[in-house]
Image 1 (cartoon, rainbow, N blue to C red):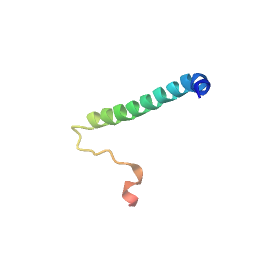
Image 2 (image 1 turned 90 degrees about the horizontal axis):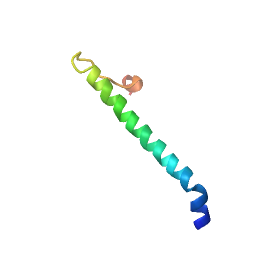
Image 3 (image 1 turned 45 degrees about the vertical axis):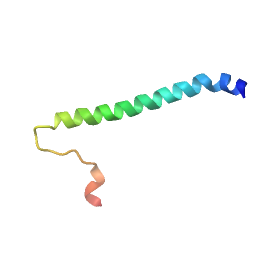
Length: 52
């Protein structure tokens, strides 16, 4: 078990780090878009929302 953790520990850490960065980037882009369209009265909606 210890050898598996040694072998794949750095890869798992890197994968977790990338996942956290992707989640942070998603929220940052959403926040930026909300601020950009704040005073225009336009709501950002997903493209497929009108189909439901």
